[in-house]
Length: 424
Image 1 (cartoon, rainbow, N blue to C red):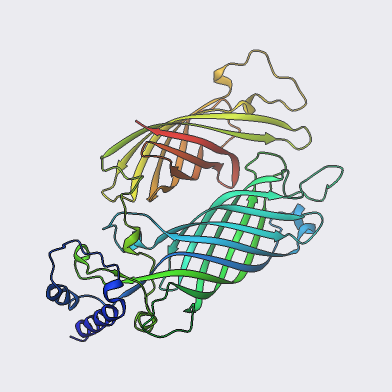
Image 2: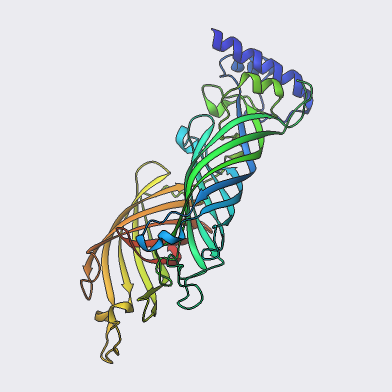
């Protein structure tokens, strides 16, 4: 009874404030005011939702010497990060977890603390999963640039990284500490954004996936405090969400009554670009990657991957099992240190064939790929008999997607793959 009374009171407050100017979205245009009021009587209290936010957060950390050769590189790191976050465009009915996934883009600028390590810039795409009412977990991948790299003559102390251009990863957890309306205005006046203070703990990683030796990588644990501006909305959600009363601008009175500030707003509903209801999907892919081996006699190889993948629906639009065959052409198998390669080199001398099994998590156009591969054939036993592949996909259109995937053998990176996949 109390919940019904609160829902009706909140509905009347919003209706009085917005009046004829409010943009109400009602699927059944034949509903009368009485029927709307009746539906609101069984509505939950209004939920304050966000559609986008921009943030800036200075951070402090240190360059982690995770290898004994890097002990001299330990220094404190200072930087600042800029981030954009938006609600995921996705269809209705995905469930609470799907509603809590958001995406964004980030740029991090940092001073790595010494002339040996120099400065770093990291930029990339990010997926964020809501954690409670006022926080989220984050996972990001992208490209980074370092002003200093290893050089045997000019910078021999930088044993961590052998290239200026690198891949980046970022992991962490974000807490919203406090929020307040953008203006000190009357309760009945609509507001469009909130200011928020936040704290974040995480880890940034730079490495080139064997693009250039050495490749121990740079790891930066950090703590950040930031300020952000968040666009907000609110709406009533009846027990049957498909019959919701409407969408309204948030008012200051709503913020006092709505401690739940989740991210799923109805204006973000659309047909999911990456979703296909078919039980099986079949695709072929082409990717390339570069790897370098040996520091004292560097040799660089460009590798090619061809793959076939069959994806099976789990019944949930966000999840598919993946089965496939990968064929790699890796000419590093033919390398002989301080020697010359034989002229009698054929496909069998640098071809790997593997069966793969994995999973795809799809969030709008973005997907997370996790695969495990088992070699059916490899020219030599210089690699483990199995490998892992972790990456991101982006649907350019319903059939074509761009893929970036890191291939590794436990803690040893093989190389980064870049390419496309086409759904048949």
